[in-house]
Length: 361
Length: 223
Image 1: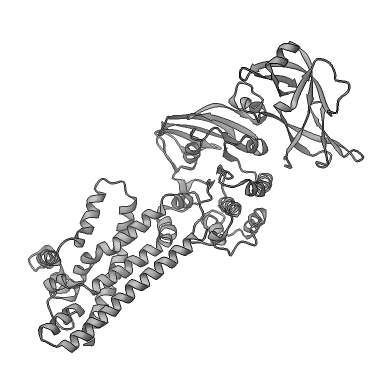
Image 2 (image 1 turned 90 degrees about the vertical axis):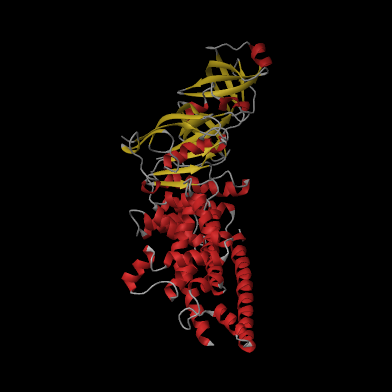
């Protein structure tokens, strides 16, 4: 029973909240949607900070809420990272970190404390008053504080949104390290698709208090019917295994479903898994194998779907092994080349970017 | 001349301690409760702010008198009546100075908001644990203000004490009564000494409170 099932129904300020989802209790699940669509309320319901009229919540078989029962927030083994850190002003960094640790079931776990402190890079900050921390540091303390309470489920409410770009870049490596080091499930709110691509394994898409769709990240990103496919940043994300590094040209090759991607620069050891991202506007289509081109990555594939984005642009969905690749082309090109569903084409990928340097277990 | 000063300090200290013990949970309830009677209770607590001390003293005299249930209870427990006793003064002072403690503490609790308490709840702190380890430390400036105001206000109390305490040396003759007494008896020198002392004391209290408040606020705002 290693899964999380939740159903919440109730009136919010603007609309009715009505969500129902089941997600695996491993990895990172992103709750994605525009501001004000009810993401935070869902997270608060999971933590027990809010109680809607109808709710049902089971974590790995344990009932946290149903018709007759409601586990109080302080009895739920969750860690909650608030949007704006929400540290205790009257305690220093160490006091904040120990607050939940002292109250958890494994309170005197020194090595664990040391581990989290070094994981979050906090050793030099322990005696600092929290007023003297930068935005990024505050958020790292908040994450460390949540982890130290030995949660069985970590909830993160846009932990990066209050930070500027510089602080964001500072903290993302810590998040990635954390995801590697921990085996607890994480539910992560975001309205930034790039953040989701970097961190998530599973995606729940929300709109106006309802769930539009929920599923594994890679399937969701390439689903042309969902609104993420319509953004200017629309991208396909794949996970490939590094199979070769060319010393002379400094090119790394990754294997994915019998296709090989080439990425400039050294990315990692042979055998390691990496996530790559292909932006839809970086993919162009041709009827024949292009003979003279500077583009490294050209794949033969089949068109499985053509979806209009607006009057001028189309998403062409291509089959790439078990996954899908989205190409963004103009209406003019579509009619000029007369692309049809089922047709075989050559996709030229101008840029393949690495999503993250994250090891997968 | 020392006796009234000692008695006043004893009364004010005891009153402040009692007020912090009962006023803090009351302020917490007033700050957090959703109860519809909350504001009515708040208004009752604030009544001594506007009520003439003689009115309060009059009703206290009746409520604590030997015929009242409270008076009888006191008689059976301590073998003495409450009016014109130190215990009676303490009860009167607690009621009279209550708003001066409850109001700043309530404001401080309200200023904390839900967020630190929610953070504490997700870190396994029960509501009682939250109250003692998050709310109280965060409300410290308010608690200090409340304690100082409650203490100072009790020191300056006159009307209520005159009504329920009278003028018994060593028992109910506090500083303000002693000054009144000296003036009545045309003992200007003694009245001067005590009055000037009160003036200096009040000035120091107000000044130190303002300085303290400013420093605590600054400490909060460094971020």
